[in-house]
View 1 (cartoon, helix red, strand yellow):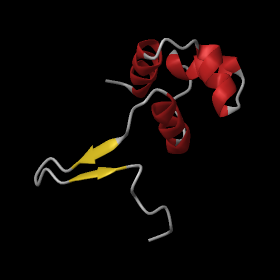
View 2 (view 1 turned 90 degrees about the horizontal axis):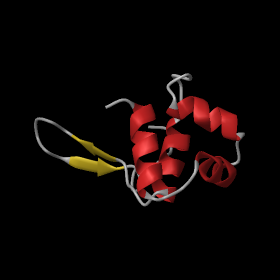
View 3 (view 1 turned 60 degrees about the horizontal axis):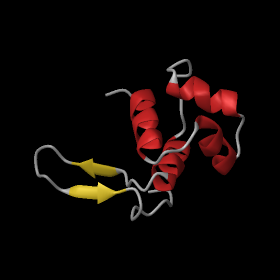
Length: 80
């Protein structure tokens, strides 16, 4: 699934409008609309994470070989 479809799906499940999300994260509603429509391919991870948090989702990274998981909420953001 593409990120634009994920953003739209989680927003709709939370019963929020595009304008609501845009206002909460501090951007123009047309910019957010472009993300959901796939008109803008580059969306910063930090913005995706903010939207996920607003919609009560957590981003999980799962190693497909070891099944180890990491959450975006508990990763140390300092440079490695």
